[in-house]
Length: 132
Image (tube, rainbow, N blue to C red; front, side):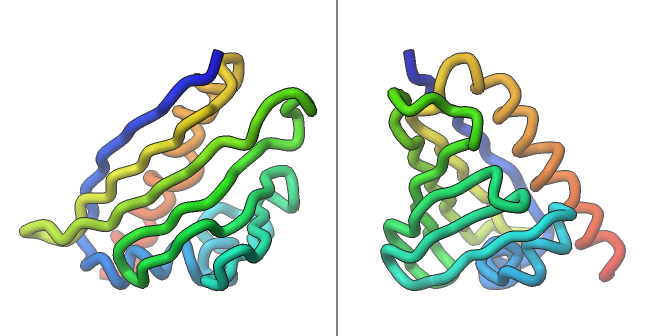
């Protein structure tokens, strides 16, 4: 059975700067500590964690929304790709990022849920803190 993971996270940077954390391959790679390839071209391939995570870009609204397919290297051939949606909402002190990760295999859900914090939200906050 597939699971949907939803998280809302606040950051002290405006949406356009936070959006760049995900959409700039070099910065994205630096922040998660492994190679990332990402493009704003719809239909282009996405990969992270040195290719252990792969997908395709489905929809981009610059500085606002990123939607992509997303699957781990260990997922079975019978498991469908998950869908990741990141929404960058302007907030009083920066950005409220809404993450919806749908169709995640149930056996992968807990690790992926923790992984968002470990590999994304915490490194992003640390990077922001160091740059201020």
